[in-house]
Amino acid sequence: MTETMAGQAESEKFSRTAFADGPRLLADIGATHARFALQTAPDVFRSVRVLKCDDFEGIVPLLRFYLAGHDDVELNHAALAVANPVNGDYVRMTNRAWEFSTDEVRRELGLQTLLIVNDFTALAMALPGLKPEDLMQVGGGKPASNAVIGVLGPGTGLGVSGVIPTVDGFVTLGSEGGHVSFAPADEREYAILQYAWKEWAHVSNERLISGPGMEIIYRALALRNGVQARERGAPEIISRALEQHDPLCTEVLECFCAMLGGAAANLAVTLGAFGGIFIGGGIVPRMGEWFASSPFRARFEAKGRFTGYLADIPTYVITTPNPAFYGVATILSEHLRGRSGANTLMERIGHLQHELTPAEQRVAKLVLEQPRLVLNEPIADIARLAEVSQPTVIRFCRSLGFLGLADFKLKFASSLTGAIPVRHSQVRSSDSTHDLSAKVIDNTVSAILKFRDQLDVHSIDRAIALVRKANRVEFYAVGNARVVALDGQHKFFRFRIPSSSYGDSHLFTLAAELLKPGDVVIAISNSGRLPELLSAVDAARAAGADVIAMTNSQSPLARKATVCLAVDHAEDSTTFLSMISRILQLLLIDIMSVGISLASHQAGAGRPAGGDADNRMLLISHRDS
Image (cartoon, rainbow, N blue to C red; front, side, top):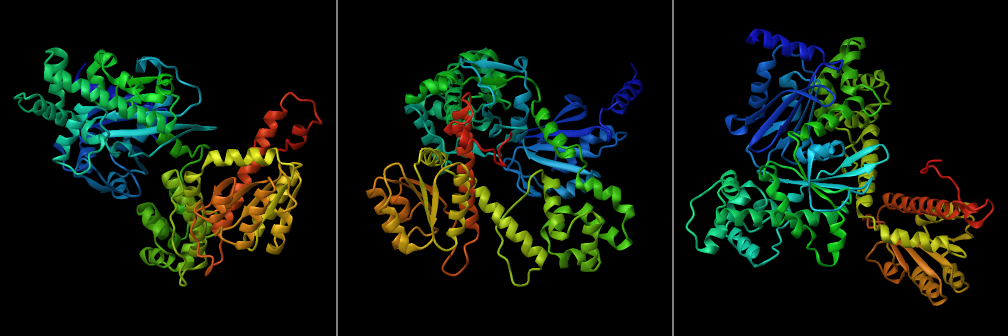
């Protein structure tokens, strides 16, 4: 076939793309190599090419070099996985002196959509779709269904991530777990750590469990063994160990694999990864079958009391080429359809642009060209940059069906990133109603997300168990917390749990002295220091009742309670009205209510209607039917 005919055949492949808006550009860009492909259909990647990053001065020249061979292909959407944390528009790579703005790259390449994701987030998203033939299992264990999966992989650095199953898909962890501190497991590894300390004050796993790290291990063991050895790169160390059976290089590989096994075990127990631990990256696959007999699995299971725990967790090496393509393609696909088949808001603005007034079109142009600037700037600056009045900005938002700028920004942020970015911002006296509304919502969402990450589920389990078997439940709260107590009383009463609420601090102790064993007090306080409340808790405990405290974890109330459901959000309640703390306390009431409903449903399964569990089996809005 002539070169012209080959080019025509390639163009015909792209013209038969399964995507209505043409093929999609995908890339996996590490510190050493960049891998590219054009996706023409689900799981179909064409024109796969690997380029050396050292040959380019930045990400734009790299992208242009690959795309130069596809001038006749119209590209609208792209997604790049990069070996770097990704947070916002500006990306500064860790192991390569490249930095860039996502929006600037998107505009320069003429793309409608450009997503930048962490490379191991993309690899993690690919894991659920891998087939047995894509993997090599190392050791025993069987994956649990619908369980958390962990992934790590040494290359130029050490990538770490995980996958959490949900009702409608998977959630990946944006982790930088490769930078946890390295922990030696024996005297030899301690000697290597001491060698590394000569160069760095902090030695992370990535410093040693990586390509450059293998070279450090090589130098450290040569010094320790008194061997004169010339400098060797990681590929040469691997080949000399596997092909020439070089004693020093073999020891390096054994030590490296043992360290990797320890890191994998730590990840497994941290995540509870009963779905398995997967090894990616560019180094381990080069070891082939030898890795299966390396010290990796023995070290993985060498966890003392948790040896049996880890023996049940399978470990795999990813052997299929370019697995990150599958993950980054999935992320891009879900972004474009918004999980519901809808176009992104950017595309919608582009399609409706001609229907807007000339002034509104200037706002649309600004949004399309500099979307993140629009997200972050107040209305006055948006109007100035678009050369329109502030009412025109509002009319633009309403023309798209939004209530105003704050509503538009909230939906637009989700459309751009696939998630709503939230941060705490103080409301200022100069803020418009739109800005203060957005800040109040963002501050609350930010606090809720932080609260979610810090929840002590064991304490919640204990609290649910106490309430389910309680003879009666009494709520003690004053002031702002009184609203939370009344909400709890209302919900628990619906579960046929005898409940009452006291909001007068003078009555707390009197009520507590009448309690009996099997009764439960739920004491709610931001400070946890109210003397009348503390006295009542003492009286309740003396009467044999249990106490659940919703308060600051370091407060006197927390120390006196049977169970503390911690709300550690800091608010100066002496100066300001507590608002966010009350919302977090209400969330705890909701969590307990859902837990009671689920537990009652499970207890009542198979029992005849009319029993006690059946009476408490109420459906609530968080539950399915």
